[in-house]
Length: 159
Length: 94
Image (cartoon, rainbow over all chains, first blue to last red; front, top):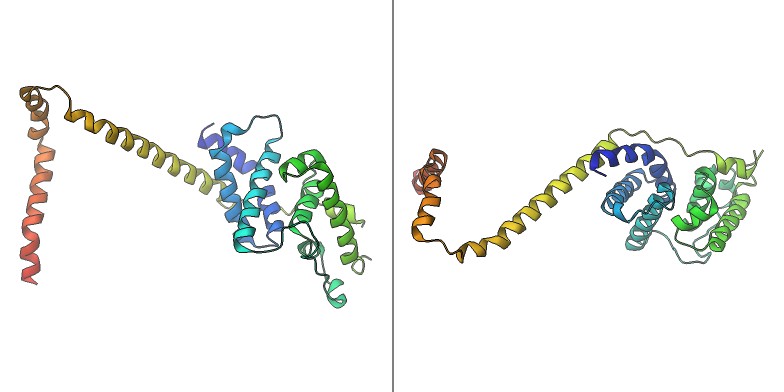
């Protein structure tokens, strides 16, 4: 596959991937686009490793997720360990004004990623688990925990 | 609207705005650079071999003669010598 053929794939996937990364970076468009560019460049470099036994999108999101984690660790953006230390419930006054994006921004990165892949991008749980390099059970826990937190955050927001 | 419905709404579309073109351009630039490096490394690896090639002096002279007689090389060499010669004069003039 040459650069021109790969360009077709980039055009197909750029919107969803950049949207996913924007959500992961809590709306930092410039950072998300940098990560998306690195993701596509790495995908092209490693294209021989793609065996085709999984969806291309899942493989691409796996690279994006690993890039995001590297960047988050380097910049110490947010806690990535499997605890709830990073979750801070905003004050009640601001909860009512929260929209979904703001509420999602309060979740931990793995929860944001799991919810986005499984719901907004409609990825099957198995593929999402592969993309996020975690066991299926862990992914389901992140989805469940993320939904619970969102319910709490959005309860005053709901009509 | 239930939470699952809210979550299942597709992500807001992101306009390409030249993003894909920039990626392809960067890929081509990197490929060119890689090719150049590979070519350069091959030449550098083969260069020492030229020193041990069993060429007679006459053969070497014959091989280099067309190169030496090339007008383009002569002009380039002349220009380089001229520039080198004028350089100290220019600095002393100003």
